[in-house]
Amino acid sequence: MHEDTPAGVPAGAPPRAGDDDLHAQWQRVVGRRSFLKGVGLAGAAAVPGSALLAGEAFAKSSRITEGDVAILRFLAAAELIESDLWSQYAELGGANGGNAAYVGALQNLDTDMPQYISDNTDDEISHARFLNAYLHSKGAKGVNLDEFRTLPSSKATGARQVGRLTNLQALDVDTSWYTRYRSTSNPDLGAKFPQAVTIRNQPAIPVSDQDTPPNHKQPTGPPFTSEESRMQAIANTAGFHFAMIEQGGSSLYSTMALKASSLEVLRIVVAIGGVETNHFSLWHDKAGNAVSQPLAGVTDPETGLHFPDLNASGGEATQTNLILPEPAKFIPGLPDVSIVRPTLDKNAGAMAAIRGLTADQLFKGQSPRFFQTVMRLARAADSAQRRLGH
Ligand SMILES: [Fe+2]
Ligand SMILES: [Fe+2]
Image 1 (tube, rainbow, N blue to C red):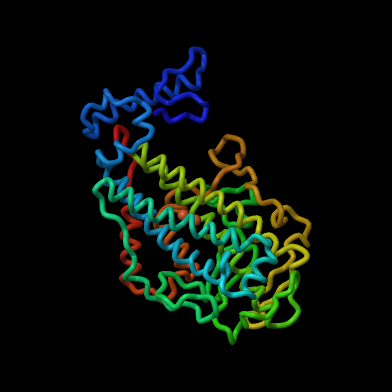
Image 2 (cartoon, rainbow, N blue to C red; image 1 turned 45 degrees about the horizontal axis):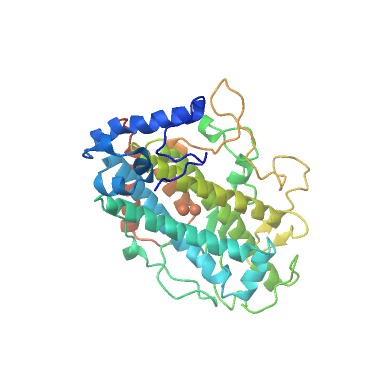
């Protein structure tokens, strides 16, 4: 059976004459045979291109470089962390979310928020599972962070009472991604970006039923009572946190792709990374609804956190519907271009990702051993180097 290419041509068939693009692709597939000899797959020259692209037999019968294992192990850890935090959001505010008032407040950002939260959660769980399964298929060790599921759950209605890897109850959400993606400057060229909203020590999920009664009817639109304002500020914080997490994933995967040696590992990193960027784009749009009319102007009565109207200035630096990446400086001397940024190790690599999540207070309460474990995985991933011929 042939697997069809997007062009509708069976991957195993030779290209039609005169189709330059397809010809180049074909050459690359054929060129992969010499690569396969290098990793010890017997009889590689006899394997048709379709089987190489399908990859299944290949996955089971070859090993990958230490660097590729390090990249995938760190990404598996990152996905377990994402799965843990997204599961907390989904339990309270997802499609079957158990906290009606939180669901109502999230729906002020978009009535489809609960579905999107559930789907994003499923995606992260699939990413973690797949990466570990792939590592195992290559004879490499997967990643298991279960021993670190020690942080307390929210006491609010809807939250399961189980140990967590992450803490969503007192976040310092970095919102500079919002101004960064509206700017033509690039963090990889040293640019710094202001916060869109200053979110400090703020829960992104309801923490208890005393603090936020789960069954009050959250109004559609701006809150009136202090209870409603508290819940809306918590949901708005979640909205900004969703995008913060997923823009980080977009940069991390782009950065890790540059280190991959095996074409199959590169395919995995690029294909999952694209979904992180897809998530970011969605949440970028929803976060804007927390800081535009009719919802803008919410203040948390407990923490004082304020969500202003970011369209009030009339400037493009904060305009809420400018959610697609502004073309930015990238390679000096060349025109501005719309890109994921940052994509350099020091700003977007594995250590940078752990530093960012730690500053977010996502790991507040975690043990020193947890930090040692994730930093060891991060250092190994950052040390991976692209090696051609693997
Ligand atoms: Fe993910
Ligand atoms: Fe993600």
